[in-house]
Amino acid sequence: MKDSLAIPALTEDLVRVLIDADTINRRVDELARQISADYATSGGNLLVVGVLKGSFIFTADLTRRLSVDHVVDFIALSSYKGDTSGNVRLLMDTRENMEGRNVLIIEDILDSGNTLDYLIRNFKTRNPASVKTAVLLDKPDRHVVPVEIDYIGFTIPDVWVVGYGLDYAEKHRTLPYIAEMYPQA
Ligand SMILES: O=P(O)(O)OC[C@H]1O[C@H](OP(=O)(O)OP(=O)(O)O)[C@H](O)[C@@H]1O
Ligand code: HPA
Ligand SMILES: [Mg+2]
Image 1 (cartoon, rainbow, N blue to C red):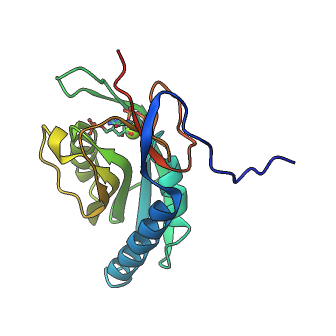
Image 2: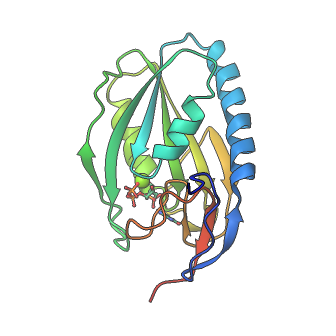
């Protein structure tokens, strides 16, 4: 039988592995420990909101390592890439009510900042006790909107990355590592 955990080889559209699966796992462990310690002293009632689709793997891995009580929910957004207006489309809202709860947004990547800026503003109108953010990857060279991030996994250069939830035209989301793509024509 094929080993479902084998690490897939790079395809010809990928330049290199930027962050391997072990390094991601170790960092997710560290983030989960830090987040658990912080929320253990902040009144409980933690609502974790993963942002679909990109954060589905990071959200699953991180929440399974949290040692504090929490509820998991999702929101689905789509940002208009290549559109400098910063428009973000809400495709599916959360099921949970945020009123009085400590909300932690889980994102795969902070690029222009438009998605997280939209989400933080939107969530703050719902009367939560607090809104914090955890982002696996940060691309500081690309920010156009300042966004405050509470937990960052890795800082990366200005290259298009795929894998561990991130895609290019829906490709490569389920790679276990983060890879750099060749720029597309
Ligand atoms: O900082 P920004 O420039 O807003 O970019 C980051 C966002 O863009 C990607 O999502 P996308 O809207 O492509 O949808 P997806 O998560 O379904 O892939 C990524 O998953 C982040 O959510
Ligand atoms: O580098 C990226 N990869 C995948 N999705 C993204 N959304 C913004 N930046 C990226
Ligand atoms: Mg996304």
